[in-house]
Image (tube, rainbow, N blue to C red; front, side, top):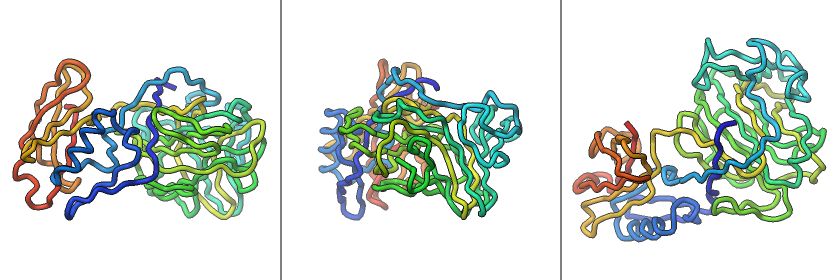
Length: 372
């Protein structure tokens, strides 16, 4: 896999800030989202002024810290297979059944993942037999902090009345109730099977990357300012067209720890499902692949005492050009302060904008930074 980065954990407990007829849900602790200085400034400004809100879950405020030391324990990008051939047990996978349900496709004719390459089409067209794909057992995944991640694309046209089950199975076992260690289910735009749910929906006909960060150690582990409890898998999802990863929720482990685990996918005999999959990886540590984004992270917001001027700071590189949009409803983004903003020297850009009169109808404003 390419360069990876560790992402701050967002706790599932929420605090709500009320501003008249509008409200904003802030994930606690805010230290997982902003630097201490930015957090202090943001809390102060939000408490003093009813005019400013932030995009959902402060997604644009997430800052990634690079982690280049993670070792890949298992992986398959499906490039070694011939197009339209059956995925079987002669390659990276150890347990594939029944064979005809799995084909490796070529994106020269269809590109669900954006660039020409090969991907895996998981197809369970029958409600009379179980369909499953598993990696070999991996001892290094037991008693450790690891991350299972892969790209997925669920077509609207897919015949689906069940669910695509993913996760960690015990040594030589299945992802059923007796054999799974940590699992969740993808089905019709919803991630289910969570112990704690925060934001568990996704769009069909859209490509994402999902991350299960599983702590199989006996102790809680901090990663980049957050904490993951022993025996818990944190779940994240990120659209492949860019943007910040979103915290979905967590799943508590089931069954007892075994000497090794295998990861994979399955459906049950009573259900049918189709899912397109690429770039499967099981890695040591809590890691996320940093995806390129044209929506830079906002790191600070300041409001003037009169409430008529907002000052935004966002991540940037010298010579970058930006457009700053605003919206009162997160739907209509046609309003912009400036569409030709040159980045400041260094790693951030700070600009001030007149917002007087912009929120008179709705009583709230949202901001979005886009790289030109």
